[in-house]
Figure 1 (cartoon, rainbow, N blue to C red):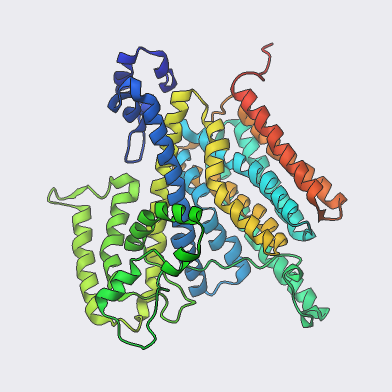
Figure 2: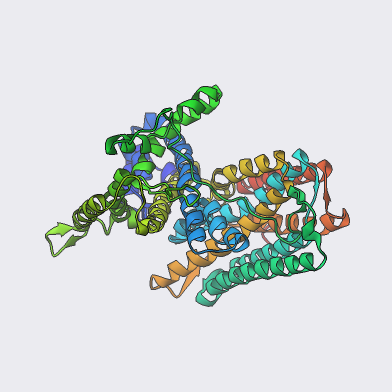
Length: 532
């Protein structure tokens, strides 16, 4: 019997079934949600337990968004600046990875367990359909514009190839080592194409003397719009005195750990304040554990007491979140656990750093904190993504829903809503072309790196290949809908001379609603293949 059969058993037998059935065990994470639902809560309170898990799921999506936007992306931006990467290379590598971190880490976690591989495919395909229809259509409705022809055709062709590779892998039912490397190789080829395309355009523009004309937002490169740089959240802009005075170490620490800007608080709406209240615990915890380097600031966001504290806490977080703390609690020689050794070493390093540096001037090695912040925020995202996948799997067991439908709905919506609002904001500000380009650039990274790296990690764990077991007809409906939306855009947009108006946007929204109806009807058995 599979784990989904638990709801068909007697109430008294469900807990023992969950604890003894191997199919109900979770490979990672800190909470066993199935055991919580069926063992820790009495049967009469099962609706309450489900409701609590649903609220926790929403809060986990909030954690993913805050971590990626305010800690992961700024450190990636700092690393790309330190490595002196061009805007185009950084935009399709580091910054794209930062924006797609929740999707990618969710896919990596889901592919680590064959039982949840359908969740990853549903999320990646579902996010693809959502972004290429709802988000792209919303941009066209908010701000009709003329799309950049060459970037649009380049991105949509690459994405169609990625979808075709995934469709073929589903048909074959497996992903081999060569196939996984092919995904990553295609992404590298995409990055090279973007760089070469941008260089050729700039060379042509210099020859035609177009560079002498004043640039406007919509006159950016016809080949690649400059991506928006991700600036770190400035937590230090509190009330400053009129007269300069030297802040004490304690004051610097208190201000650095304060996630609330009182001036912004007074000027914001009640809804913003309510959301901020929910964010405060997460932001405080992340400020305490994740260093952020900002090259745009004169001091690089150097906070001596807090950064020294990071040398102790950040490695501890790494040890306790890697593989859900399995390595952190491993005892070295049967004497000390790894986390204790990390704390001792981190304390010694923090003490040396504290006495060898000053509050006013960052040390030469301050740039290393960007890499420490990158690793720590990445593992926070991975830990939250693991819990998201486990909750969705438990909800699928309770409601007898396939992993694919959970992926294309809850997981895809949760991971994509932040990018959707960002793109809509860009469109309202007069940058619809940039927002439209971001739609395709991000999902190309998500599917190629999400599937390629996820399967590669699974293969590296002594597996010769990754088995893909589609959840019936629904996966093919999902893949077909994504392919159909891409083909329609590839045909209709050039026919409109790349003029994207409100009619085009409404058609995309109607397409997504129709797809969602068909997908749900397929999930509940209303639409099914007739057996011959």
